[in-house]
Image (tube, rainbow, N blue to C red; front, side):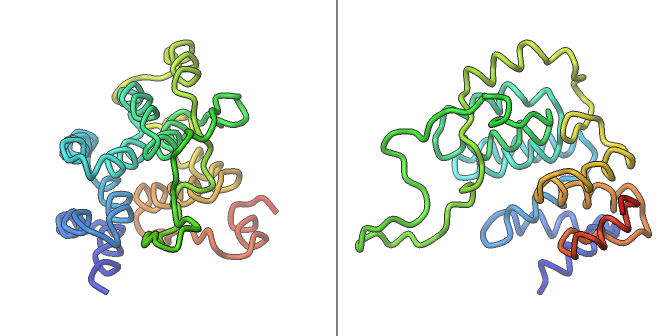
Length: 220
């Protein structure tokens, strides 16, 4: 389809494809995929400006959060933490926080409780017409104050204006490490970054059998 053709062209460095993908970010079903690839093809200033457009649209804050994780600039962390107070956005905000800092919210005891009265995904009520699955089902619930306290203690380790992925500035060596040890969505991000940094190299396929991936990465 036109989206995936544009996605592939963008990955290969076609500048015109970025504009096409931006149009796909305006409506479902490929909004998030469009942001994740197109924003990586932009310089950091342009990416920040596009993210600000999402912030100005109440219906696109989720995309702004995903974009923040893509950009990886620590200057966005305070805003990300603020979004953790909104139940609908808390978990994706936590994921973006992790994408930048590398901190496992559950492991570091920065996790909170499911908000009382909040529902996500389909319910058991017959009259509920919402049949979409919860996209953040497997993500932890961050506790905003605990996350904020952690950030205040550790923000000196990060430099504004630098792109980070899982706590380290983006480099081929670090990306290969993430491919070997990260969670699936983190590995998908690393694969895109590596393909963009190394033109002519194929996109690392994170869905192939594990033993093949380890062999390619020199881990087995």
